[in-house]
Image 1 (cartoon, rainbow, N blue to C red):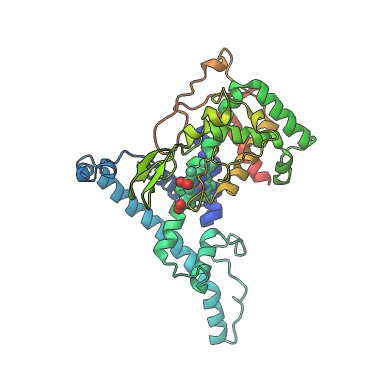
Image 2: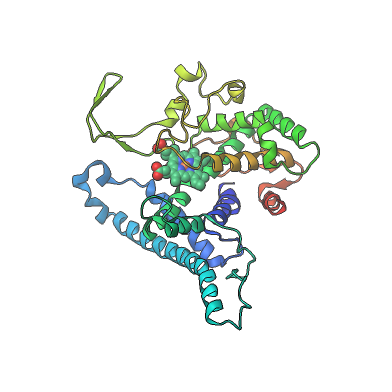
Length: 373
Ligand code: HEM
C-alpha cells in the first residue's frame, strides 16, 4: 500500500503543483526523481555520528555517508537546476515574443502563444512560477536567489511526500483493526455522498467523524515522531532541569500524543470518539497534539496534507469495503514500525476490497478518482 500510495498519489500531485510536472512527463526522469527522493529522505533519517559527537565526524568518511550525501546533493541539484531553468525560459517567452513583435512589425502571429511545451497549460501557475515571480518583482522583501528557490522546492518534497502518505497507511491499518470504526466512518461518508460516486472537497467540512479518525491517527502515529531538532537560544529551566544555551533539543511528539495525563487511562487505544466535541486540534495551539510541530518553525503544509489525507480516505471509504485477507484476524496485524525519520509500517499491508479485488486491483480505481475530478 505504501509504495502504491506514494507513487500514484502524493508524488504526482506534489510534482504537478510544485514544479508543474504531469505524470505524462518523461517516465525515466520521473523514476529517477522518485529514487532520488527516497535516497534523500533516507539520508535525513540516517544515523550521523558527527551530529552527536562532532569529534567523531570523520567516521562518516569511512562508512560512506559523506560520499552518499555528496552524490545525492549533486544529483538533486542538477535535477532542480533543470526544473528552474525550464521555468525561467517559459517565463521569458512572453518578453521575447513582445520583443519580436516590436522588432518585426509585419509579423505578430506569435503574440498570444505562451504555451511553450504545447500542453495547453500556459495559464496554470505552479509553485516555482510563483517563486520566480517573487524573485523578479522583489516581492519577498529580501533577495530570493536561485539557490534558495531550489532549496525551497527540495524542502517541500522532502517534508511533504512521505509524511502525507504515512498518515493514510496508518489510518487504513487502524481501521482494519477496528472494523466498528470503519463501519461508522463508511456510514458517515456514504450518507454525505448521497449516492454520488465521489466525495468532493466541499463535503469534507461535514465529515466530522472522518476528521476525528484522521486526528486520532495523527495522535497515535505522528509521521515525524521526533520533531525537527532545535537549539536552545538561552539558558532555561524546564520542569526542574537546567538546559544550557546551544543544547540540541528533540521533541517527542509520539510520547506527547500518548501521555495519560492528557489522554486518559488508555492513551494507546485507537478511539476517534475522543475527538468528537473536543476542540483539541493539530494546528500547533494545543500542545498535547503536535504532529505538525508548533510555533514559527511549525509545518507550513498542514492545510495541503490534511485536505489530501481527508479527501483520499473519504473516497477510499466511499468506494470500497475493506477487509483483511480471509483467515487473518485483526490482532494478527503486524503493527511494527520501521526506523527512520518518517515512521511507516515495517511491512506493507495486504488488504482486500471484500467484493472481489485485492489492493493492487484498487490502484486503478484510486487513480480514477483523480482523473475524474
Ligand atoms: C501529514 C503530513 C505532514 C506532517 C505530519 C508534517 C509534519 C511536519 C513537522 C513535524 C515539521 C517540523 C515542525 C517542527 O519541528 O516544529 C514539518 C516541517 C515542514 N513541513 Fe510538514 N508535515 C506534513 C506535510 C507537509 C506537506 C504536504 C508539506 C508541503 C507541501 C510540508 C512542508 C513542510 C516544510 C517546508 C517544513 C519545514 C519548515 C521549516 O523550514 O522549518 N509538510 N512538517
